[in-house]
Image (cartoon, rainbow, N blue to C red; front, side, top):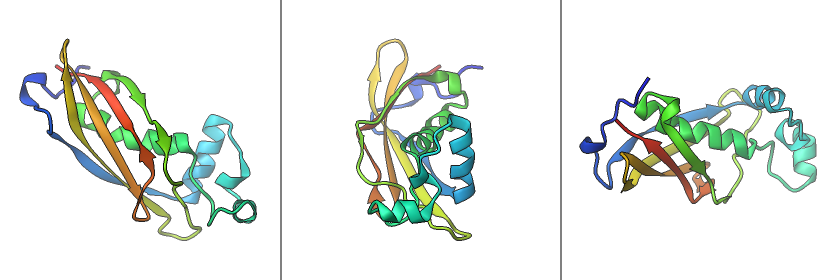
Length: 143
């Protein structure tokens, strides 16, 4: 499957449709199993608080995976993702043990157009009113 977004139809500044993702404790437990990372701060409130965290926190890699979904949803093909990086995590995604969980609002825009019908997408993720990732960018291959 090829990208549904045509390189000629975008400009620097074109917005990638943002999304809001809900994160619940059960999602974190599933991710622990999927990636074999059972660090207790990702599922045990007592341990998280004992090391100075406000509550259980999402894995950084979980947050990265959720955020890049706006790019692959936009292109309609995960195979268009050529590169993806996050310079650093600026704050954790805190996930309370309630029915609402936490939310992560992800937005993006075309930062640069590259030769070969590629584009650099700059991403922003906010949870609890704070930026949670700094320097997030993806490079995609467009039609």
